Length: 205
Image 1 (cartoon, rainbow, N blue to C red):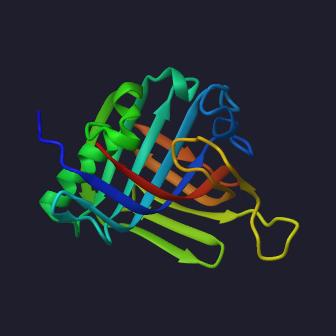
Image 2 (image 1 turned 45 degrees about the horizontal axis):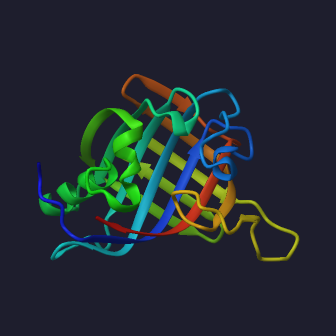
């Protein structure tokens, strides 16, 4: 067993899935069936600040492919991880531990839900903000952009608040603009599908 260090991540998470707008998993906390009975998704995290023991994680981008056969809470997930190739080996190790669930804490539930960890790949991972839009790439494996849904009050997006969803207590409702995932035998397109943004503050163990 690899040693688990004290860890923390602060930043933003973007996720885009095959559900029709809006994904039922956020409000049901993974108990409801996804729109089509299964979940195909990509997610990405921009780390604004964080550490794994004495190793800083600040400035690293990471993305993932998620393939879930039914309700999120029933497990059986397949997950592939993409870590920015600018990250050091120590940073990559830490992020694999955290995002595989092995580091316990906020993401520890992944250890229970992920049945098939497809592995970690190192490649350029970008996470760009342009107003209400986020664009993410992981090499040519994930090439995607999502946009916040405007609310009734000008300049404020539609949000889900005060939730105990694993990502965080406030989730911004968004929608895929253009989104393609091509890896591990999966060929997915999520244009116009459900998406979400969340400021995250995760820690462990």
